Length: 267
Image 1 (cartoon, rainbow, N blue to C red):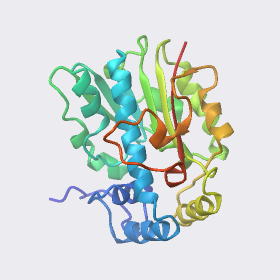
Image 2 (tube, one colour; image 1 turned 45 degrees about the vertical axis):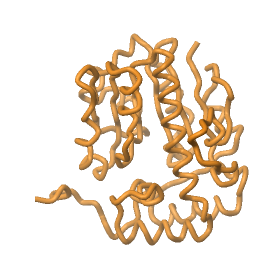
Image 3 (tube, helix red, strand yellow; image 1 turned 180 degrees about the horizontal axis):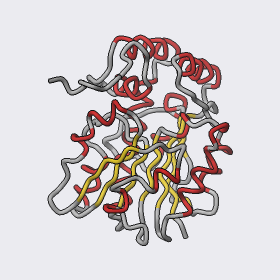
Image 4 (cartoon, rainbow, N blue to C red; image 1 turned 90 degrees about the vertical axis):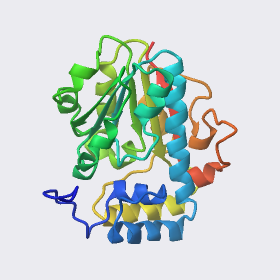
């Protein structure tokens, strides 16, 4: 029996999660995904570096927050598992860390078991939920069995909100999710921007829209608004490869990343 039996993956239609997997060098992608990703790479050969810079930001930010004592993580828009996943990073610092992955993508659902192999001391859970329905997300079965919202939670929305246009209420839905988090919680975001390579990003957005995926790149001011009323950690909002890089991180320019990142704490 195939992993995909009974799941309509629409393999003839490019999919953003599988395209991202392709940029990262993964194997969960198909001809339509590779073709669309090829169009992106023809416009922006640095798209692979951008994806890897975003992934490295997730690793670094998770490690920083776990070392600071946060032991609960809610990762929305999980995507196809690519090890090390968020729970592997968090539990390598704090074995008792609890992690909930949330996505509404049947592709991710088929791979969810790979996201549940955490430490014996900790706990990892996958819930099916859509970020555009924050009320439904927060009431998803299993979420509150794993996450205690009376204590600090790290909410991760990495490389997600550029797939939530203003018409779908991106800023209000983030504000709603922030409102239920306890003081000391963290908001972790990365987001594509047109600020460094506007023409290339405009054309890339068009490729995703032509494939049926809504997309909206945002400027620095539009991105910073997501952090309203929370305290940004140093170095503030910067291109993804510039957020607390380590010696092991490859050198990626702001234009090659074409994405902002930031981590903020609820006072």
